[in-house]
Length: 455
Picture (tube, one colour):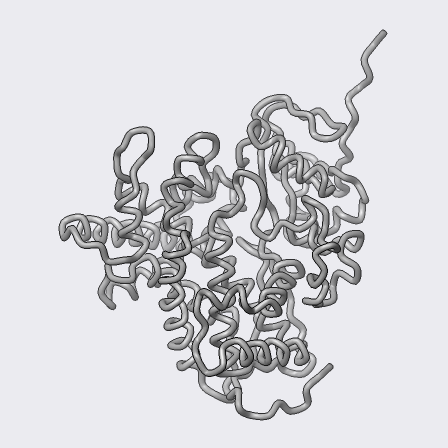
C-alpha cells in the first residue's frame, strides 16, 4: 500500500522564469489582494529564485500558524532583513531571545508608564495643531508622520536631549523610517551600490546610533532617572546573564520601535482623519462623545476606556485600512499546516489588509462602519481580524498604540476639522505600511459651521 501524494499548493498566475512574480509585485498590494480571488486557502508565490513563499488566506490556518505552530516557526525573510537594517530587537528576535527581550521591555508599556506618556502625547498634538494654518491645505500624511515621530521621540527621550540634538535625531529618524520600506524589498546587493539613497540612509542610521549612544553614556554618567523610556531601558537587565543592555542593544530597540511604531501610527491616524472627513455623521458622534465624557478638560489615560465610539472608529480604521500588507514566518522543520505538509525553509505570509476586507467575514467590507463592532457576538472568528497580530509575537505595544491614537484624535478633533476637496480620490500605496498617497485636506476652525456636509 502506497501513501498518498502530498497535496499540491496552487501557484499564483503570472510567474515568469528566473524572476517569479517580481513584475506583478510592482503593484505589491494589488497583487496580494488579488490572490483572494482564487478562493484558495493557500497560494504559492515566488518573490526571489529558490525561495518558496506560501500566502495563507484562510483565517483558521492563519490562527494555527500564529498559535499552535509558533514554536516551530521563525519570523522569515522580511524580519531577517529588518534585523540587518536596524539591529537585533524584540521585533526581529525569535525563540528564547524574543521572550527575554519582551520581558526586558514590558515595563515600558505598563499602565503607570503609559499614563505618564499621555501628557507628552497630548502636548505634542496640541503643539502640532497650533502650527496648522486655518484655510490652508495640509499634507495630512506628512503631518501625521511628523507628529508620530515627535510623540515617540519625546516619550523615549523626554528628559535626555536638548532641542538641537532632538531636532537632528528627528530628522535622522525620518530618513531611516522612509528608507527601510524601500530596502526591505531590495536584494542585499542593491544596498552596497554607491547611490545617493543608500548613502543618505546609512548616514542617518549612523546618526541615530551616535545620538542614542551619547544619550546613554551621559545618562549613565549622571546617574539620574529622567522618567523617560531611555531611563527604563538603562534599568533593564538580561534575565539570564544579569547584565544591563548595551548601548548598541538599546539603540536597536529604539530604532525598531521608531520605524515599526511611528510608521504604523502615522498611517492609521491619516486614514482615521480621512474617514471622519468623509463621514460627517461619524465625526459628529465622536465629538458628542468627547463633549459628554470630557467636558472642557483634556483627555487622560482613564478616558481611553470611557470613549467606546471613538475606540470603534479606530477599530474600524484598523480593519478597513490596516497598515500591514505582508507578515512573514518561516518553517524551521517539516511542518503540517492544515492539509499541507511544508518542508523546512518554507516562507509563510499573510496579509492583514486583504484579510480584513474579506466579504465572507465582513459584510459590505469597503464601507466604513464603526457600528459593525457593537455586538461582541458578531466578532469575526480567530485569525480573521488581527490588528496587532496574535500569538507569542503579538505586538506588545498594542495598548500604547491605541492610547496614542485616542489621545491624538480626541485632541485634534476638538481644535480643528479637516475637510477633503470635493471629489478627491485617495490612492493607497504599500511600502513599509499601507498608507494614503497625497492626502491633502484643508484646515478649518472647529467652531466654524460645516458647509455642504455630505451623507
